[in-house]
Amino acid sequence: GQASRCSVVTVPPGAEIEVDGIKAGISPTEFVLSKQGNNPRKLTIKMSGYRTLEKAVTPNGQAIPIGLILEKQ
Image 1 (cartoon, rainbow, N blue to C red):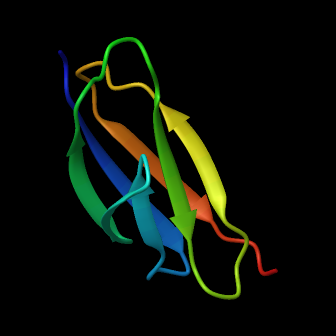
Image 2: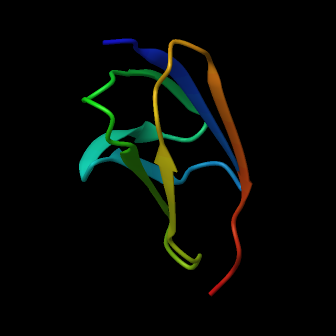
């Protein structure tokens, strides 16, 4: 399959990033996202005191930059 380099930056920094429920790092972070069939991968971005965000991302060999401003709960 085709993997994509995914970079996640959040405001404020320090959010926990999960891919399909598995920890991928703390923002700002960068990781390689491998393709799994035609199914999108589920990114979950969470930080205490802020709303949890979910994003579906489909790796296609291109870089995937993700910039998010977290909302207070």
